[in-house]
Image 1 (cartoon, rainbow, N blue to C red):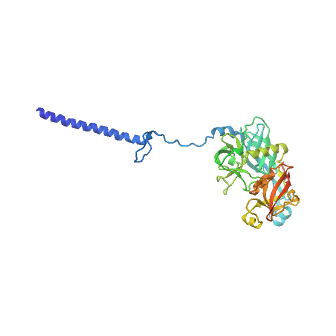
Image 2: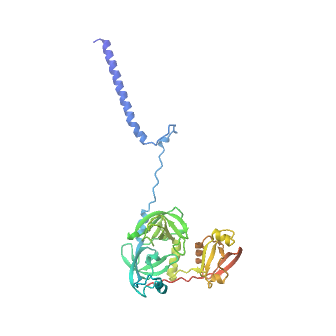
Image 3: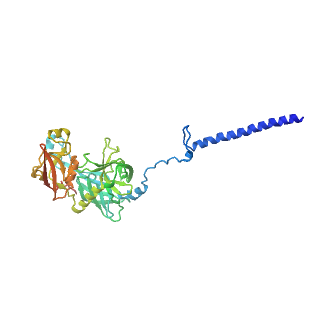
Amino acid sequence: MSLTKLLRKLFVVGILLAGVLVGIVLSGRATDQPDVLALTPARSSTSAPAGAEQAAAPAPTAGPDFTRVAAQTVRAVTNISSVQVVRRSTSPFANDPFFQYFFGDQGDVFGRSRAQQSLGSGVVVSSDGLVVTNNHVLGDDVAEVTVTVGDQRDVKAKIIGVDSWTDLALLKIEGKGFPVIPWGDSSRLRVAEWVMAVGNPFSLNQTVTLGIVSALGRANVGITQYEDFIQTDAAINPGNSGGALINARGELVGINTAIFSESGGYQGIGFAVPSNLVRRVVDDLQKFGRVRRGSIGYVQVIPLSGRLADELRAPGNDGVVVNEMSRDSAAYRNGLEPGDIIISVNGTTITDPSQFVRLIADSSIGSSAQMVVLREGRRSTLRIPIEAQQERRVRRR
């Protein structure tokens, strides 16, 4: 073979080897490229600033961790079982209007008694056995109340007192060293703050649900006479009544009381009595066996609508209208009359009936309320003495 032919063959082999090496390099780049794209965020066709590829994507926001709070508090939430004596008429005329006109609901005239059990929740607020619950959990004509504490012991309870105005009740169980949830300051709550509800829905003991504070100072919802509720979307169902509403610090900020529901179950609107109000009720029930509130006698007030404002010659819609009142009330004796528009009490402008009721009830007994009223378009100021409220006593056994 001549030298010329040998050089030609080596040239061809060299070209072939170079092609193989280029193919290997290109193949390596193609397989590496998807890994790089998977690790970087998508970019537009415009060039990014230097170092943008190294910017970390924001971490996803996690929800609140209530595990520690739950571990510290659930054992202080109890199950309440109340046995009530219900009198049921056996008369064939029980549904007759004529019979009811004379005998009403007095089933013990022509009837017999039967026991009826109600279930709910309660919260231990002192290590020596004070338990707060709802009045409606106990019911009327209570024969026996049993509290199931955190270690699943059933303990008989004594009723210290009840308050129908706030739907609260205070019980006492014998013993010491019970787990307690510390009191929180409900005035520090803020809308959208996380809270935890603990109770016994449908007898499922120590159930925990989580939500936020939906609204504060909720009133005019028709649950109790004295309304100043915390509204929450934490799941509350039948059996949760009397349970605890707890903040992120593990403090008791409310007693769960009611839900708004068209189905009878949870729909995202629950109401709790604020802890500051609960403490005031508990203190009075301990000291006096009842809650001491101010009163000006029987006075029923209604909202001042636009139509009423026009009829009564009111310049605006602030105030409430006296709809009914008793002639022997302190209010009537001191100049208040039906049809008057109460504009302010002790310098506070009145905006709705619930606010008026709270202001009078919270007034000190023996003091006086200075009311600015509008009558036939003319303003006047009345001073009405605050008397002790006379609450109907519910029979307890």
